[in-house]
Figure 1 (tube, rainbow, N blue to C red):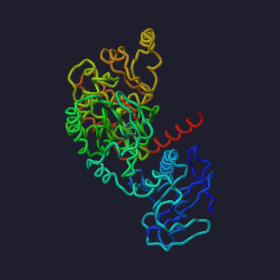
Figure 2 (figure 1 turned 30 degrees about the vertical axis):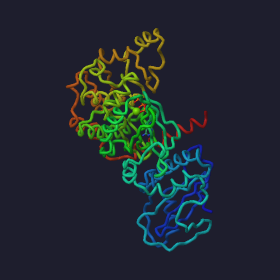
Figure 3 (figure 1 turned 135 degrees about the vertical axis):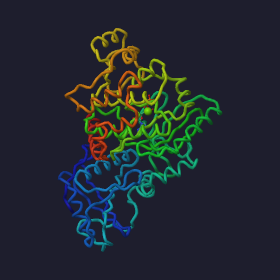
Figure 4 (figure 1 turned 60 degrees about the vertical axis):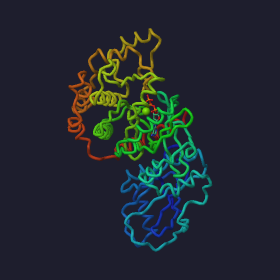
Length: 466
Ligand code: ATP
Ligand code: MG
């Protein structure tokens, strides 16, 4: 038995880790790693070297939830893989107490001579673990992981998706008018996010909404959430999208500038893509910016269906704290209003709190007198925005990030986005060319990935303590 150690989140750190090394001829070798020492990237390569002695292996891959292969070439990348694996295991544990091994695929190997080494269990079936009897875990471990997101998109976009195909599992969150579930799509064995919105509308209006949503099938950007389909059942619409295992940015605390910089680049590219299709987002805010453990950042909930937006607005209050002053004042809405919301969202994420009201004690007193208090400083912005805050956004000067705490280019970027006059805010091309964006447009998803993984680990540790 090889005794090595590895770095797992607290709630998993007493379990042995089984790494299944998949070899090119279809077989597999299981390697059990005991907890409580230190597992290095080099250690995994050493073991691969023992399994595949004729090959020179310098990297290996694992599959993410979409079945896409992620390469691991360093300790850092290995750490991200372990965090991703742990989050999958913790997710699966609800449905099955048995843990699927972590599957890795050695890269650039010559055809191996299969070899058993002392203490390793050789599995030549080339398939899935035989000790997993839950249907979800089973299918997730085999077929589903082979399917690429593109394939899945095709299957789901074929009009096949309906209520019977989907099993809603956990609630991911509630919003204005709807609930988002983590769901299991039976035939593709994929995890999806399904937003369910109760809507009492005519069949004609339902048809209009479905046709307006058609454009989502055409949206093809790595910065926009993947859309798999939508359907009406009874008086509810279900909108099925890609599941993001890091959730939305509103639940993260203060985000360090070098992470926020990379996130800003992705969000801006997502918005620029939508604007290029003549779609205004209309609801840019931290809860509509999603992240995953691969370090991807994607926008969701943009207003492609006017009928859907109107139908929801009839039932629920439509003002939110991220709206531009001109929009709160009922004036015309344009790209510039999305730019304001981008600025205020990033200001909040940098400060770790909503930036209004600036003259805090004075406003808090006023608001407390009306029975609304503490919520102003809570990281989760209340659904109903106190009128005073809206008035403050319209009447007062925009808040400015404290210079000294943040880089000059970041402060300038936010200040420009939050100019009170819409026309003075930068146009899309100016935003893309801004030094703050240029500086962080380096394609480094690792920074975001590590930060998401760490934050999720901390959250789990905190939950297990409570
Ligand atoms: P509002 O309804 O005012 O836009 P919201 O964005 O918080 O508010 P929802 O859009 O209903 O509300 O989303 C609720 C929560 O569900 C989000 O805050 C997010 O944490 C989670 N969520 C939404 N979509 C996904 C997804 N695709 N993957 C993972 N989590 C998601
Ligand atoms: Mg949302």
